[in-house]
Image (cartoon, rainbow, N blue to C red; front, side, top):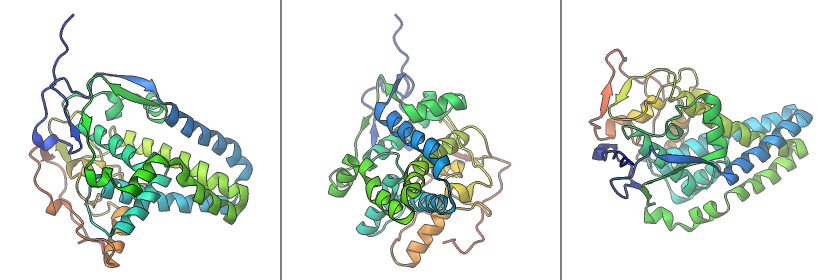
Length: 323
């Protein structure tokens, strides 16, 4: 039997802080796709309630409640609390604000805060390698990638060691959120029922979770397969793409080529017309004195592997929400 090919360690600039190679055999290429019972049953259960109950309980108020909670949890919770704050530490804020934002992010229904750190960081680490399993790069056919992301996980033969920084790992609030992430739906379910009865419960919880998880997968698949690029990341196994006209719908997460180029930036929409509601919400928090030290491309260190594509227009900002 031939010895498995080694994948050379990436340059330090490609590293992801919480991911540490265990040996020279550590790589994101060799692994096995397996069914993930918790992920699969969680999504399937809510999908069945949404499909069956959604049609029977549809109405103006339940749908409006679903839309309002979806925007609230995705904008303040997922993109601000989990992605830009907990994962990338792209801005600072009081501890109580951080906990509110992280709670809202957990209510989206993808998992607890530690789980979200792992899912994000191992994917980032894998994408920065010369070669990676298509599970991490969204390069499979859309229907297969949907099945993988909604119902499965990848068990690497030689995974990296995942180390959460002590201040986060030992935080009692985050540990509670991690242990009881599913139960975070309960107070919101009670509120939805109080506002709109059983229809509010169906739309405000199950339909919202299914829409949010499916939308998160779809944007991830599109943002690694189609769209426009201003930046190229040399040595990475996959490139990110910007998805025009989807800024408002995705809370700014559609500007994925920008994010690949400047992962530590609190601002994702960098050019004129690249709407970024997550950044707007952060600017409002800053104006109220509830956030500060927001990082932008201008304040981040250079990355040697980042190359601007020749035909790309220069970014410029013309809105009120610029620094």
